[in-house]
Length: 465
Image 1 (cartoon, rainbow, N blue to C red):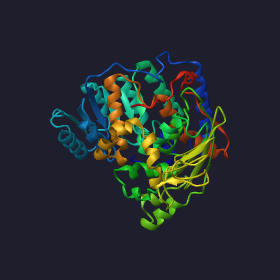
Image 2 (cartoon, rainbow, N blue to C red):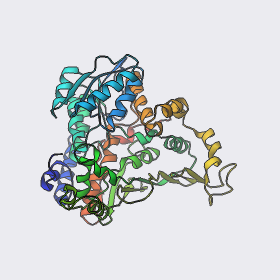
Image 3 (cartoon, one colour):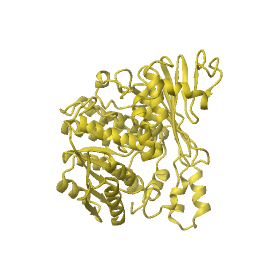
Image 4 (spheres, one colour):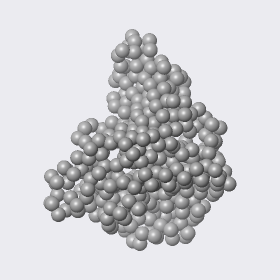
């Protein structure tokens, strides 16, 4: 991001002080799209034709994309055919890593670096089956759109897009091209998250009424990345946007526990409030000279945002976001039912009548070694199959590898993906809707129905073995 000019930044991103106008524009966009279907194929349970070998291209191999490239190269049935990035050294590093991880399977990787538009040339020349996008946020939607138009499946880092308009473009293009567009929410593949999904599916906590999700992760040190790297482009988002900017790590798992957007219930409305903005400004003043570019920004994004989602059935989700405050990491990962509660950080469970062999009633948590029997009884079958390998391969405790393995597995077997394009858009829509709500003093915002009411016929995510 070469210029930090506020006006130019806002034009390229999402809601801010102009949120009243932009929110009405988004509503009009939603009404138009809901009234005028794409004419394509509904992608909720879509099964693409099987691929014996998945030819993969990468766009962006910095901190995140380089790990994806290395792990994809190690998965049987893949061929890494091209890598694109702005920087030659990052491309060369990933080429070497892929060749080492692939045991000789990736010897003809095409390199694209330098000009920002060379990724388009890569798509035209290499014609991959699938493209993995790990660039800065503003490029996610434009790149995914072009990938699908060029005939490949698009797999996008979080968030899937920045604006509601972009999300509708992704939905319509995916439907018209019959190409997957999946946001890679890795946390859905964590051991605890898979355990809780299995327990929810088996009715252990009864009817689910409420959940709590968060991404609370102090990341001020990323501001040291000033010319390239995550902090170089993410810092202006903190300065110029005020809302819940990064909701999906906490929201993705609990939304699937609750079958939101899949057969049972759907996102309805959201209200959102932010605290005052203090931490980033104080950090910049303490660590950089008065004339440093980080001290030229007007930090308007609150240190912590709290949003509440209400579903069509009246169920609730609290979503918090804070990448500024000095506090321990948490995603909350809490789901409350009529018969008990499952919670994270640390993993703990309370059930009416107690947890067998651990507690006598719901007034005490079962945690630590007391949960051994719970894991034995409810461990997710996919974790039983892949957990040891995933831990060995790494990536946030193995969840990255398991996600990538499942993507490749689904493409090769012709299964529906574990996450569809509508879920990626719904989870990501929290950001622009929260910005509108904050700017309007907490006024409720209505979620777009990206499925055009077809969510009621979409199968809930099964317990994949």
